[in-house]
Image (cartoon, rainbow over all chains, first blue to last red; front, side, top):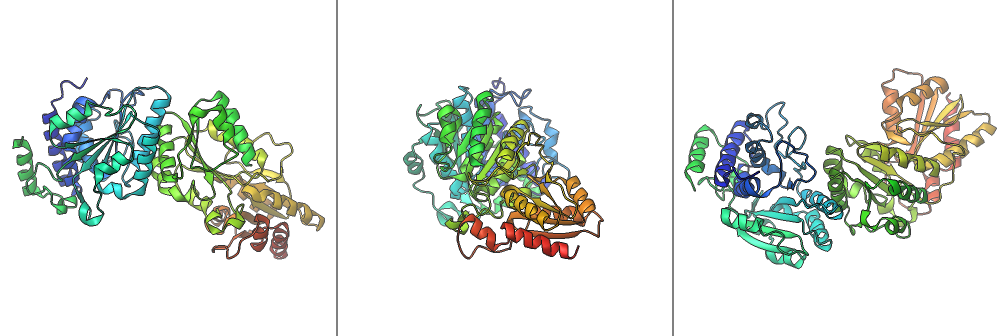
Length: 273
Length: 308
């Protein structure tokens, strides 16, 4: 059901939507949405077993955006996949809109869980994965987390739990763009050696270039990496990816592009790749 | 109450395979009953209440009715944001059970005194808050909360509460139970304070004061009608709770009365003052310190009725 969606086109569409949405809403978090765009494009074009005409189908793969502030990119992917009209995106964050600037399921078909406070999504995902295991269902649960989010202790509670219960139907994708709200991960609270931590916690880990479609697809089609373990994909990404003046710039965690910068950014994301 | 809870949960789970039980590694010698019968629907998540609550929400999003179980403040305050965002916002079937509500674990120190839980749980949208008064109410409440969708907080005491209701068969969430009628004053109580309150009312009768006793097992939604009737018919209300004076039963009743337009009501709250216990001791000992013993309740009623 996903075949007709060209991943690269979807990635460009997500980026274009995100830029327009953050511009229009004068919203923050454009950088984080751009860093996940390629991951989401592969997921929503080729990987997730979902049905836009039946968003609550009980056999669907679940997708949880645990870094809820990156929601514009997910809303864009959902709209492109036909879960709701693309016009809704124009209301993002506006008065009376249901499209909150942290992901919400209320009124938005295709959103499996609402988040916004960091460190919540993986526990919810563990519950969904546990239900699937014990009910012998074959759906998978994908949780996209941020790097800064791993400062939260609750994430590590869930990491311990998932491995202990051998939740091989659970997949964490970590958007490792190496920037958090006040600076680099290294400066604020270092996560390295990161892969070793997940391995030590009994997860099967793969590190990929989170902007390389082939890498992403290869990882997401090799799941689970180990039949006895949950899978973690550490996706090395660039915050603001695709827009030269946003890439790796902390300020674009907060700023919204004005008309001129929007046009420049739109031009860049359309011509690149 | 604890005994009734697990017995009833096992009985319900026998015919309802949506029921799951999660614990954060507490409930030794209690939860084994469930585990032995339904190992596939039981998870000890380890000492991790935030994770437990998030997992429960995830299970409930997949059609389960997930009970989370721990003691005192652990299943509530420790993970209050998971309850707010993951459970209440999604409005899913997670039923939070705390054993040791109030001063049950009095000797264990302030960390184990569950004395602000009702206020905090009551403030959360979509949450129903229930503190049964005796083991009979626990049994009936369990049936009721499984039948109804959405988040519930069930605040229990210990395994020692005496039975107050001899013939109770009807229990409705949001409807107070009139345990004893009276015309001079109404004693509104919640949770395990029911027994002391009932005892006090019996003794007051010998002193010529006819006290009505309401078991307000549901803190939210509060039975406003029962409060208004009490105000009109008895003219004086004393609320009695093993909880902080801020935000619990007394506050909930005061909110109703303050907006009722009834200016003739005499009203007082008997509760734990806004402080941490400075000493430890048994539940009854600490209740005595805060005026929540039978004698304390009698004194409070007498002083209230002196103005009556």
